[in-house]
Image (tube, rainbow, N blue to C red):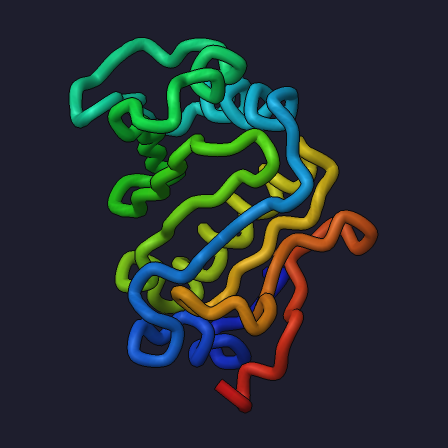
Length: 161
């Protein structure tokens, strides 16, 4: 059975309600957590590409990525957990893993399931909550992986969105 049902969460997947690129993050992380994420991406079978300033490069250790100067060109880790769904990680700080997903690519039950599988894989690997908030909205998470429940749960009422 799916963690979340489309009919229950469709408001949280509506780009007009949440913004096209909701904020997804893991707080309280470290260089080791970033490395665990890099390892997950490498071992998962997902397609991925690491780039700096738009130029593809081999994925270095997380410690090297996070030690780059503040004014260095932007580093992106683009991950396709399934064809047609792009997740973009931007390693800027060891203290938080944040990434973008495009809700327009996550419509219907299949999209909900893809996001739940991604959040679950990350949350289990890191043993930390992975939460999603509306784009630019720091009012609180709407859903996320809960390590205690070992699944993705609602963190807000989708009827109020």
